[in-house]
Amino acid sequence: MGKLHLTTAAVQLPLADCSTCVYQANFLPEGKCVPGDTCVVAQSGRQIDRFLRRHPHLAQDYLTDDFWERRAIAARYAPLDVLRQLPRDSDEAVRRVLASRLPINELEDYLHDPDREVRMTVANRVIPEQLLRLVRDEDYLVRLQVAKRLPHSQLRRMAGDVDWEVRKEVARRMPPFALSLLIKDSDAEVRRIIAARVLPDDAAKLLKDVDWVVRLEAAQRAPIDVIAELVDDVEPDVRATVRRRLNEFLHEDNK
Image (cartoon, rainbow, N blue to C red; front, side, top):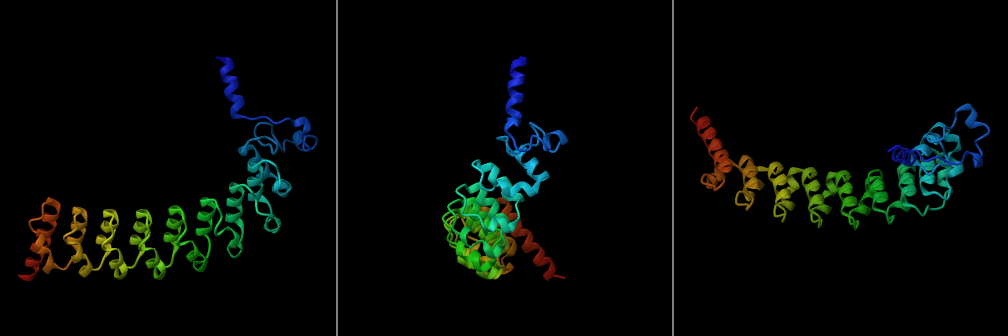
């Protein structure tokens, strides 16, 4: 049992060989590095991060290190001027850090990076003009990020996206007067969002939708003079909503 405990502890706290470390003489005696906790040469991202967070002036020394995680962590703390001079890194984790740190006007080379998370990072930062270049990205998560940031006036470009999650985001953000572009969407969840936001005259076009939630939302927004056709709808909640609105209208009209 004791052996198992020691083995688990060893896995949790990777220890480097301090005898070969350049910081052994100065840092170790002064507690500026701690084996198993704050160590730049250990194969442990947490230990490397603790070390470079404490000694950021040393980060640039590890930007070309053989270990990808050491390079990626070093890129978090190294000066921007140094990062700008680096050749394109082969590891996507390093490029993600660079895409998050470089000024937004210097992200051109990352717009079509092969790694989708790099492109997602870029999509979350670039200006609208550059964002348009990712509207047709091959990955739906990148396009989803674009749909979250694209100016309202440009969202119609994504109304026909092949992915329903992207179209849902478009439906949430597109101005109500433009939602007619999505009113015949093939996905019920997209139409539900539209029915809850669309202008009254467009809501009337959804009163015969096959999805009862769409009809329910439409019945709450459509003009009062067209909702009577749903007074005997097969869905109780739809019938109740229609009858409530009609009764309220009659009550107001008789005042």
